Length: 259
Image (cartoon, rainbow, N blue to C red; front, top):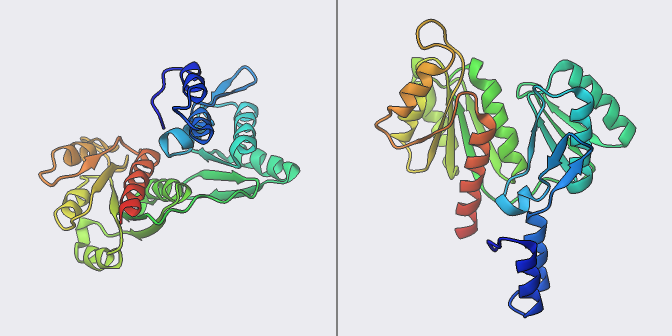
């Protein structure tokens, strides 16, 4: 996308022949915003502009407002991703999706909904490997999986491969030999991402999870451990599965496009 400051700049370059209509259209779609009543300005051009869709956070939103935003997103782009969905919100979405003739896919471990009018998710050949240290970390790992999948990646997962039984990790890594990037999810002391980063020649993203208790519990110990790693890895915030999934998918897509 061309880094134009204004829509007028784009139109001027089309007028002078410096920019084709097709290039201008792609750029304008990337800048597209749509007002949803008086509650939201929906960034429907984000996928074109940044390579990732807008993800709607359900927590903290009134159910009618959340549904209005999600339906607007589906009508604009064909798919809508909603994260951190509560039971009441899920019930409301189930009813509305049936009424509107939409497909609803609910991933219970991730607490995520994908609404669709039949438009498929993209596919570009990128491969993401996701490892979770313990079963308590799966909820965040599943957020990573949903986002990476919705951004066009093939996703491989291996759960409960933490350092308390380190021999479980090696076969899991062998099974993920095609992965172009790894996302490693861990709570408590958060050691697993550092170990994986010392074993593979691919980018590793560490995700600390808010498990653990006592001193430095609730993910703080895991975050500190990952930030202090002597292995080379990137680290996102506590429980930030959506961010990690999007970052991994971007890397995988770039690699697949250059292979």
